[in-house]
Image 1 (cartoon, chains in turn cyan, purple):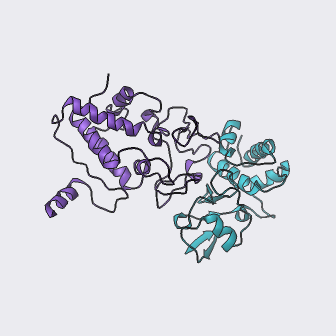
Image 2 (spheres, chains in turn red, orange):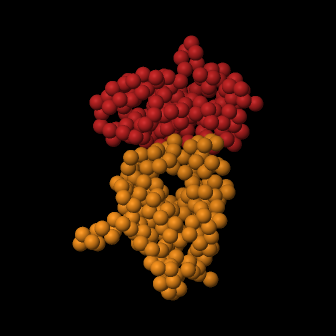
Image 3 (cartoon, chains in turn orange, brown):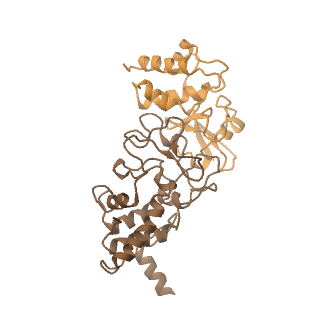
Amino acid sequence: MELIVNGQRRSLEADPQMPLLWALRDLLGLTGTKYGCGIAQCGACTVHVDGMAVRACQIRLADVTGEVTTIEGLGTPDAPHPVQTAWIGEQVAQCGYCQSGQIMQAAALLSLNGDPTDEDIDRAMSGNLCRCATYPRIRAAIRAAALRMGGV
Amino acid sequence: MIRVLALLLMAGPAGAEVMPSIVAPPEEGSVSPADGLAAWDRVHQVVSHPRCANCHVGSDHLPMWSGPEFPEPRPHGMAISGGDSRMGIETLPCATCHVTASTLDSDPRQAPNAMIPWQLPPVEMAWFGLDSAAICRQLRDPALNGGRDWVELAQHLQEDAGHGGFVAWGFAPGGGREAAPLGLQTHIDDVLKWGAAGQPCPE
């Protein structure tokens, strides 16, 4: 089977029922996407499928119908995504384990809603848990990224 | 046998349906009001089941968690809101966790999935917490049911279940979750009996 991941066509020998997360990490070596709970309760495995946030632990390979973007494809050290720039600016991460999922979720939110209210941010991000409780800095970084991306 | 099969095929649409059913409306007026009310009671058992009602929520757009899997009814965790879009587009799309799948089945611990994008029904179809009489009046009012007469209501159930939408999911929610009662065909037959009786509602 074939997947387009971070702009590249990748061939896989895999059970079509395999969750996308397993394929990304174990077959393609893209370990920036994290395994947290495996049951859509924590958000650590969030990636984009055609730009929409999807929990990679939930979607089976057979059901991936669009292009997958992982944290490795969102931006680069030389050209980070505005959300990544804001994350660095606000020094959001503590242990960092959940942060790729947080960043992917935040980027997806801003692509749909360029000027989110605090309530919008809370509603969009409450499915992404952070055991270090970096939530205030996550919110600040999303506001900063919205400004950088042309929001108000 | 072949004649019966041919009749059945004529009664419903062709094609590979996820959960096939037949819409065979009785003649209008051929069902007594008492039998119509009895049919409505069974329809109500289905539509008020948490598997169906949890998403038929109002203008706060907050899906509910209620039913045998939950100790007490409460809004969906994680501060989820369907928003005006009823699909969570303004904040977190429902389909981020409730992925669009090629099966209705899912693991008991997974976010359940259907074969169409997960979403709340239109806000005018809210009936979570309403009593049987109120839901009945709502379902017979075309302004509140998507502009459908009684046959079209049954056809809607058939069509949605046929492509693995939420009607099919309610009757086959996977993962050991409790299904809505009675089954799709009985539900469609009951909607039609209720309709043929003039859509009587409890007082």
